[in-house]
Image (cartoon, rainbow, N blue to C red; front, side, top):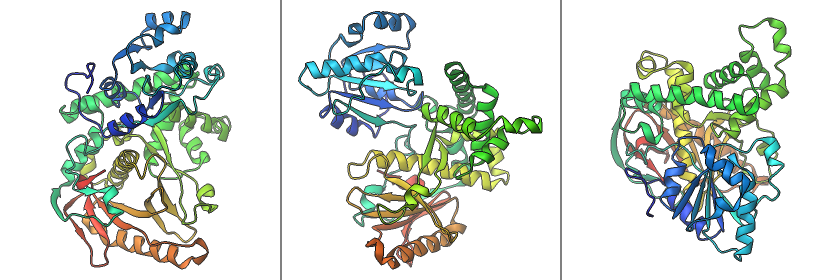
Length: 435
């Protein structure tokens, strides 16, 4: 860790990837939602820093871009999107150095505004590597023992482990979320912080884009009710317009919904999970409508006005959706931290015969594994049956040159231990999963 490492810094899985990128590229861009820990992790690798969300510093840099580049290397340029032109200055500096690696780290909590993007002349390809950061996984928070390695499953490595997880623990975990600053807070305070976070994100997005705060809040609420679903733009439009005059739904058309979804994606708080089929070039990968997840289950809980007590009172459908969001968040963190996996290797499966599998992970060499997510033990057999149906279907499709799945896994919420089912399917609680 470097001289700027903050006191109380908690180690993150992204560190090994960041170190590798710094050894490869002249600059590394670390993107992700506000408050997920980008700046603190980047400071641990930096020798100097400039914060462009500081108004006075932003004005100085806009007047003279070279000010942003001065300082010991690696130089952290925090919230670079506030002055998008700095990215071109970084690229030119790297070119002038003969592509010397490890000179700059750029952090950003939002993609540059559309008009600003036009002022960024060069993409930085070959000079600037990009990494996505997310809220903390359960392993990073110390809530998973990591004995079941996601990467290890591809090689048949699976450790039988006892780890009892109760619904009460899970309810608090999904409502607390993976934000570094709430680690150690009471659940009441953690949710209060999440509420403030969501409100500020909506206000920031509206100020930055001119969008309606009411419609942004309506969209977030609709997405929270439809977590893990590939809902249509028409459904989202209807939800947003609820409570208004019937004729108003005509104003909220597909293009309007798409533009609002883009705002949330640009802020990195909404992510899509795309479809998978066994052949790499299969059309199903393109035509399958993506499922949408908020980047952290705590945001959906706050948007719906739900606390742990409400989840435990009997609304297990919502509980299950929040738990699935938690699992997808952790799977994204673990795949992005793995050398043989990486960003974009997580997908889901759905066909025309009502078969759906929650997560497919495809390694860079073509090996693949499938995961079903279930809140409690009483759904384990259902998950096993789905996974076996998928395996059978894929292997019967000779045209796709099928290969056996490396693993099949039922990922559980409430559970007592990680084990192997009689059918050879792995069963493990999320509190045992790691990279």
